[in-house]
Amino acid sequence: MEQDINIKITDREGNTHSIQAPTDMAMNLMEVVRSFELAEEGTIGVCGGMAMCASCQCYVLSDTQLPEMQDDEEAMLSEAFYVKDNSRLGCQIHITPELEGLEVELAPES
Ligand code: FES
Image (cartoon, rainbow, N blue to C red):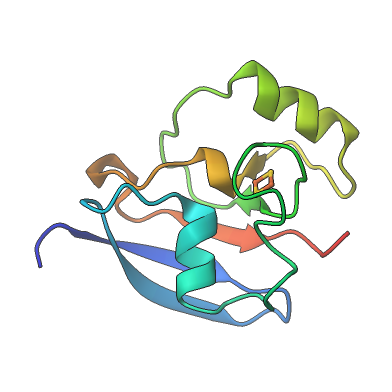
């Protein structure tokens, strides 16, 4: 489907996966990681995508223009471990055509 976008995700073992994520299924980046089984079950998406656990934290490696962080994402990241300047919560990043070429690395499990 031409609705898919190309994303590169580096898992917690340091392996980079080139995947194609659908833009027409209302998925977020955390759900993409789960559906491609790039992180062990139970170690990502713990809060179900409510910006309340930071298990979906990732580092944005590309200069892709992402949607602004909302208050709850910012608040969660201010309490999370291993936070860097380029940290985002995967569950707050919705897969849209604008994200073509996105490259992220999963933050360590905390
Ligand atoms: S899944 Fe819990 S903060 Fe993203």
